[in-house]
Length: 389
Image 1: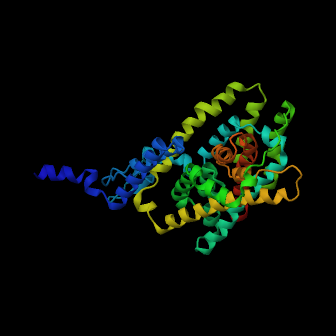
Image 2 (image 1 turned 30 degrees about the horizontal axis):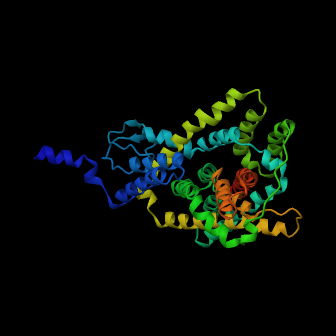
Image 3 (image 1 turned 30 degrees about the vertical axis):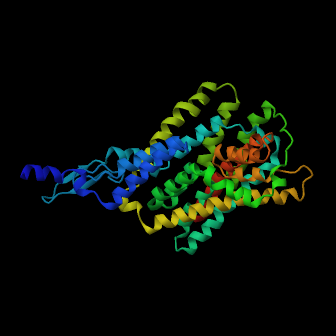
């Protein structure tokens, strides 16, 4: 019985806390939403499984958590012993050091078509307008007594761009990285749930029925020049965004140049899939109950929801404002795609538009502010990093 009792003390059951149990249930809910509801399965399945793995209690001296970093320990006899970090801590280093987000941006660039944005440049303004959620939430976080750096990292959740949120949080608020990452990816997955009510509330039936002229065809020369010119302009405005935008536009140049298709194909398939797996799983594993279930995390989730809602409303309302001065009207629903949840927010615009008129195709128009939102959120992150460092 003594041996059996000692064995029980080495199991996870003996050290399981209510917090661990809650986080395991949350991880299972994420997995269920991904499989049953098809909510961002490529993100929620790795994050959900990571949360389950990260909340299995470990016995002393056998730590496998993402926070078990390498160190030198002085023993009682004066000797120095080297303690290695865990496998998960090395995987998580890609998150904490900001390595994974730029690699994901490379893959996004290699699969992004900026043609719709180039064919109708005024729609770029909708992507910029949606960033209002970032800065309004910044002030909201300051009101809740977060530091300026923490407020900047929390505000970027409104851009609905998980990699950007992780990158900025790693620089400005590493202690809040897990909560910010989970909040950002959660709201990205819930785009089909959060955005439609806001879009319908802020528009009339007549506005939702507006049909837009087909976009013009963009030349190959324009598509090749754009990533280089856009990178120079954007990073001169916000040098802090040089890593994210450099990889984004580099990936796009690989795609559009037509001479590096092998590299572009690797970036948008195998590479981005591998990085997404590692990022999602390690972020999920970082949500250990003792570090994640805090009042700050709840505030971050609340501010994240507010930020996302304001960003959606900002894009829709700015489209309505532009219509006061335009002869060719913009369907205000398109403004909701200004958040950089690519391509989900553009699909939501298409879905809501076709509920009013099944023959109104808004997807291509919505992709313009959608990809502009990717650039806009990276610029916003660069500005916040530059100002708050």
